[in-house]
Amino acid sequence: MSLLRIAVPNKGSLSQSASEILRESGYRQRDDAKQLALTDTENGVEFFYLRPRDIALYVGEGTLDVGITGRDLLLDSGAKADEVLSLGFGRSRFRFAGPVGRFGALEELAGTRIATSYVGVVRAFLEERGIAAEVVRLDGAVETSIQLGVADVVADVVETGSTLRAAGLEVFGETILESEAVLVTRGGAVPDGFEVFRRRVEGVLVARTYVMMDYDIEQAHVSRAVEITPGIEGPTIAPLHREGWVAVRAMVPRDGAQRLMDELYELGARGILLTDIHACRL
Ligand SMILES: Nc1ncnc2c1ncn2[C@@H]1O[C@H](COP(=O)(O)OP(=O)(O)OP(=O)(O)O)[C@@H](O)[C@H]1O
Ligand SMILES: O=P(O)(O)OC[C@H]1O[C@H](OP(=O)(O)OP(=O)(O)O)[C@H](O)[C@@H]1O
Ligand SMILES: [Mg+2]
Image 1 (cartoon, rainbow, N blue to C red):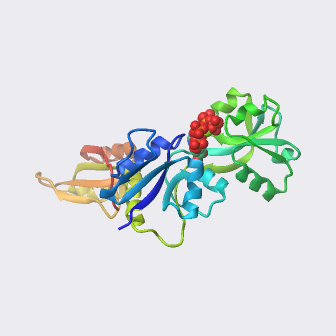
Image 2: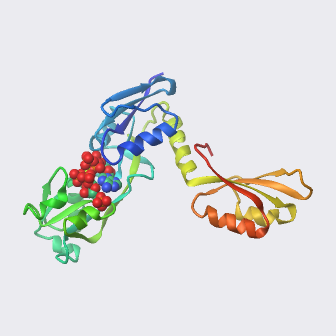
Image 3: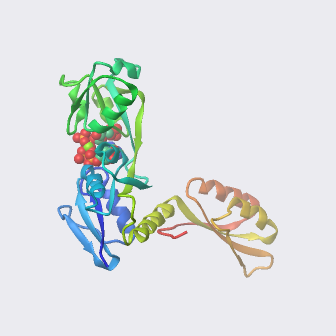
């Protein structure tokens, strides 16, 4: 059987988290940041470590089957690749920014010079709104371009906003797009082994957002307790070696799990335990 060929970011913000999720999904990953490729025959996959900006192109061309990249990079590339799963890391917003107090509305972009590394995204946005402006392509450190007189406005990735602040800039106008790391494929025919790969990664994503909750409770309160922790298919209820008591086990969303524990305690549940889940298939 042929190996599933997967592109993984070799550097930058997405690289470490991408390798982490693959490792948690049971795949081998490189331990030397200079390694260019890695074959994991046991799991039927081959990894290629590439620049995240190039990944959608390889997948769109059909040279590689699957890729991990940023949604912003996928859109910017114009490649014929489709987003099939969002991965929950590398979250950012793509925004216009200018010197503090200088710009208000998007219309003020008309006639300006806009520096960006995402020329495709910016041109498409301007065109859609009928705004005529000059787009200046830079590789990075875009925020400095205004101070250096190359541009009036920047369009760039913003996460915490600290880079913008340090450059004396502030965002204006609406968010151009919300990005995060995504899994991309070419669409059309599904390559051999892709469904297994996707299920594994999804299993890790779900496991990250859920925790396992166990508790003991009096039979009389079970129906109320089960409303608090309905589980996925329904909680497991097992007899307890104590007259009139049962043990309940259910997956619950990680967010708000402490609140559920409080409610259960109030209801009379005891021995309430929370444990991490590392992977799952639902
Ligand atoms: N500070 C950040 N926080 C979250 N995501 C980010 C951040 N910077 C870039 N990204 C995301 O990472 C991807 C960009 O990949 P890129 O290789 O350019 O990473 P980078 O972090 O900018 O690395 P470098 O500039 O060192 O090449 C995009 O999807 C972008 O949205
Ligand atoms: O809002 P913040 O948390 O400050 O993060 C956003 C900054 O992070 C990235 O820069 P990076 O370090 O990748 O440098 P680059 O601009 O050269 O790509 C991005 O291009 C922004 O400049
Ligand atoms: Mg960067």
